[in-house]
Length: 549
Image (cartoon, rainbow, N blue to C red; front, top):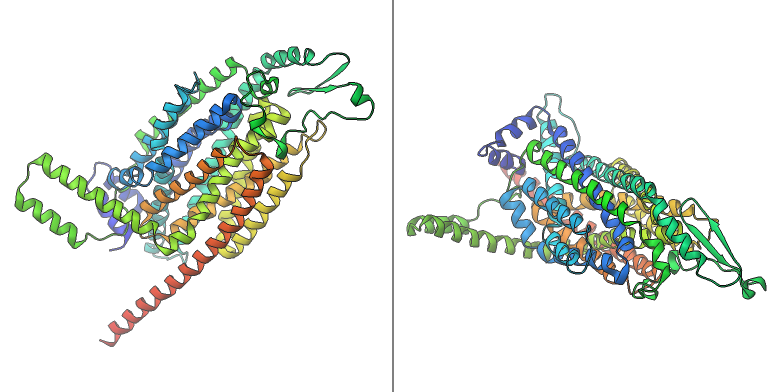
């Protein structure tokens, strides 16, 4: 029996499992996709609104960036063991909700940020951080396969490959996720701009006392630009207040100096932060409750794995020994855990995965770059933290565009051509980030850079999860968990060097990993095609032998 059939049979034993099976038959699969997508959209929007501000609002001693790094270090350690176990034994819905509760804990800790509150919250959040992403990917793939099976059961059969439905569903899902970035960023923009007067008054007071003698202050709607007119500037030198922004930003030069007045441009007013975090907490808790009530349960074990002889022997031995209830449950638990770890290990060391793994690592670098370097060095440093929400709206909106572009063109032109297009786009975006020289007259380019980065990020995320769903369709729960783990490793690397390296050095690293990851995924594509051809030959040979009999 195929995976969908196995999954639907498994559903018949739960309270709401028969319900979802009937809904699959009656074409209600898309409804569940939208329930999942819309709820995650608002929850992720609230979360990304906080994460995007971490490197700015908690910039002293790098607390915000360090907390993000801690989240993904812990997540890396947990997603190889904890996340696959949760998905396979408790289901994707449970994994999604428990992970989102971790979001709530982390957001709440930012109400009183310190090393004693934010770091412990980051650890708790990190334990379940990968659960909603692996669980959602698992759930969306299940819905895509269910939709494909339904289309094949129609009287007028549709000649649409299963892969096309998976890419389509991932495209729709990630479009809603990126739309969540727009919602969260819009809320951030509304709150920070609404309380902008508090920080602007402070900025003006600090600026007037910075220099002796003659000075000129240029005020913009977002922040105050100060130009010193000294003897040196009169003789021909020009002071550019944004010279150390963009690719020339180096955090280590100022974040550890508590007397550094330059930090004030990164910090929004306290009241705006309290209002913003309270709104995000209400949104997150509300939509988690909606998920718990209205999102049906997907199968707890979806991988195409038949029960092994070893498992049958174990169960038979348990019955013969007649262990007590709790002893039998504990023994079954340890057996399942060891079996799960063995499957994870086999997946990780498989040649196809070894060639594939640099691709999700690169996505982790891209994700961290947009949330730490772009938000701080390009947005807060040039146009002010009050405009962060507006810039993130542009970034998130263009991520939606990139995801939709990927959904449309990948099934039409194929994965290889999409990889070439992806490489050219990302390389071009890094050149734009590197060569832009900010000054008070070209700050509009911050939004252009956000748009270019967003399109590249959305396209990359769509094609990445599509690769996982196609390459590892026989072990999806494990594959998505390990993918999230490696993505987190990339985020850890990027946040780890964030406070140590200048932005232009990080751009060199981004470009290097771009080309290395594309080369490795090209090798993985060849291995997959060879494996598929070999499998087709075996199936054809079996059919020939059957006909000859």
